[in-house]
Each structure stands twice: as structure tokens, then as C-alpha cells.
Length: 286
Image (cartoon, rainbow, N blue to C red; front, top):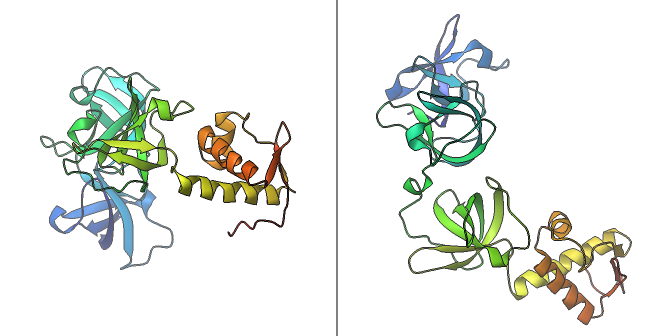
């Protein structure tokens, strides 16, 4: 069966001058316009298509890939605002996605990026966006272990830190006091589960923590030193942004790893930069 607002693998049942009609089973035949038919299409082959409704509410297929499907959270840019119905968002298709006024958490403006959930309007059976995110987070208790790597979408800033949607399902929070830099609203990031409270609240971290984090990072730093002739221009005076770009960790974690390497006499500080003292003493595979 084909699903509205999602990618489907469908087969063509007939060809017309307008394009291919695909078998949507319970949804009936769905047109794939000529401009989306692959040049190497062969009769009987499965086609990977996205199903949505056109301006006349007819089901139509496209090989374009939207930025988000029904059931997913995403950060989308406002293209226009219609005084009667709401805002229209760029979601990667030729037809823009409607964010109705009733689904807005606050007024939006052209060019603004808004975190939304893509869903199907029960009244109209159309695909719409909603910025009322709390309606769509999973009611199921989160089942994450401490230290588990996860992906999350930064949804907004609060007095405590940054709110996020974890694995497209649960609400999480990155506490401000655990961060060394500002985060970008709408950015997808990788991090770790720091804690899960009995009421289901999730405490996130950008870095793994404890011995495992430091140990893995020291291996990464030594490998980088060896690739660069035994010296790097990064040290504990480097900016958090430089460290995050180069090693994907916070400045706090980087300083802990440098401290470990220094205590073990594997590096020396050049001020600026660091130097590997014995290039053969420690293999990156250890």
C-alpha cells in the first residue's frame, strides 16, 4: 500500500501522454508526471517516489526528495506568508508546505527558519506542518542507556539551555552549564545520553564523558599529531569553535585529554600548539 507523505516503492500500471500511473493499491492510481519519470525507466520496474497532493488535491507522485516526510521533525525556511491561511515553507518540493496559522507557536516572517513536525491534517487529509511540537513527541517512556550515542534536532533555547527532539521521538535538554558555545536552532547534531529522569526527561551531552571519552580522544589527538609531523597548532588556549571543528568535542573534553597526555609525558606544550614527544611510543591503535 502507498502512504501519503512518505516515500514508496511503486510499479507503473499504465503509460499516458501525461506520465506514468502507479499502483497505489487502496489509494488508487497515482500519476507520476513525465518530468519525473527516470530516463532509464524500464517497464515493470519499481519506482522510488514521494506521494503528496497537488494544488487541486489530487494524489501525485514525484522523484524529488523532501527535506522531511510525514512523521518527522525538521527545520524549514519560510518562503511566504498568506494572510488568510498561514505561511508556506520550503521543504524541497516544487509545491511548498503549508504551516497554518492555527499550527504556529508564534508569528513567523519570510526568511525565518522554523522547527516543525510534518503531519496530515485530519480535517482536510492534506500534508501540513505544525510548530506545536509538544503534541507530536512520543508519549512512550524513553528507553535509552547512559552514554548511548543519539541524534537530535535543536528546537529552541530556554533559561536552562537548549531544547531538542531526540531520535525524532522524545524531548531532551542540553544544559547551558555543560556547553562551551552557542548552538544553532534547527541544527541536527550527534550527542550522548547523560541521564534519564524517572519522569522521562532526558539530559543530553555533546560529548561522551568519563574515562571512555578521554581515552578515545587521546587516541584521536595522537593520530592527528602523527599525521601532521608530530605537531599541531591546537592547545588549551584554542577557541571552543576551533576545537569543535577539528575534533568534534568540547573544549573541556579536549583540555582533559591534553592533560592526560601531558601527565603521561606523551606531549609538550609549545604555546601555541602541542608536540608529540615520542612518535613511536604510542600507536593510535592502542
